[in-house]
Image 1 (tube, rainbow, N blue to C red):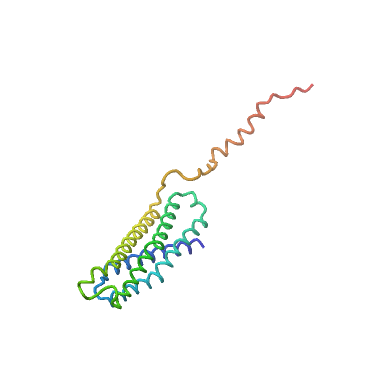
Image 2: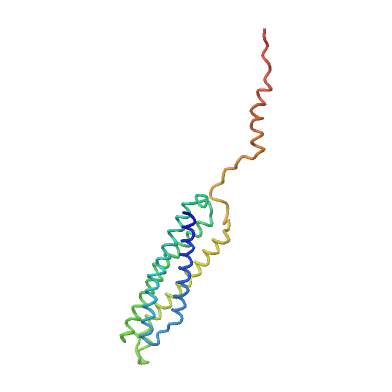
Length: 199
């Protein structure tokens, strides 16, 4: 059970990081020069985000928390909670910033294919592309931050830093010396009692 969850978690992290990297490359390579080509690329990016990135992100979060539940010893580890906090931050940034900006840029790209945003005339193209450029810049910035957060979570998972004292002090298990000394301590008082006088 735990091994299956671990492999699912690792696969989801790999799919998430890979999809982020591919979308970043596509966002940098695809320039809004040809409206039809740019609109097709943006639509392909939206499909890849919905089919790969979002499911991988959700699977990463679910399997990560299930792994903590399956191994109670990890609950006291601070690096586990730091990694979980980074995962929640990645999800929040993706759903609240990156995906809305990506949808906005895709909407502008589809409109540009119809000739309503990117115009061939040099006079109106600069002003018409301002909303598209702003959405692309915000999307690219959010994707880079999320990719760096994923790399930071991987570094924490590999190095497992202590990040301070444990949340709870574990109980000290009895040593062999304690096990030998305990019977001796219980016998010692009986040996020192004075013998009763028999009249």
